[in-house]
Image 1 (cartoon, protein in one colour):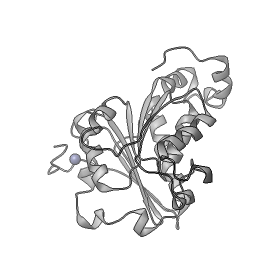
Image 2: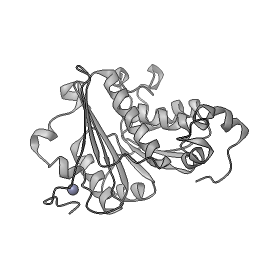
Image 3: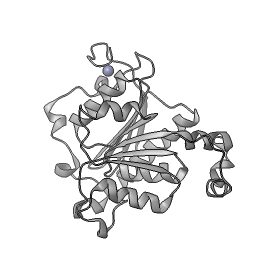
Image 4: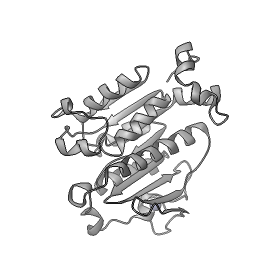
Length: 250
Ligand SMILES: [Zn+2]
């Protein structure tokens, strides 16, 4: 965390945000002090990280155990041909640092697990779930509920995207598992077996970054579920409520 005032260079770099009444100098300082945890540096995590680093989030932590493969390049926009075979976290850090070398970028080249999740989540101000499997999603949700952390979760499969923002700072708002109860059918769906249209990940990951900025700046848009259809451009926004039978948050 940095409490130092913005440098002259930062004032120039972020000038297009500083002129906004929604950001300003106070807001930019809040961004500089914020710590964001990004779990999964794939199709969603790449654009989310790119915009958070560009906009001046002080510290981000990237969690992913995978290596860059050729099939990733269709949508995981931080990776280039020369990154093939490298750890995603390392390749992502190089790309992000070349955009903005004033951001602290931590890398965890491990799968998120019950062993490392609690300490990673408790060290962050806000958590972005950019993972691609339900096991990880449920684990992130459980620990965010227990540790009272704000969670922004997104998913994109085939031509449809979803975005959710959970306010776990108080009990009773509802959690990921209130909406998605574990089932075998859900567990079977992912980009690998269902495919996904490339820019949809950019849309959904950028929306995650936008919600994270809104939260840090104090413009709250939590407890919402947003769906987006890349074919029809139809969007739906609903405010969800807790499932009284949820065994995680109730
Ligand atoms: Zn719940």
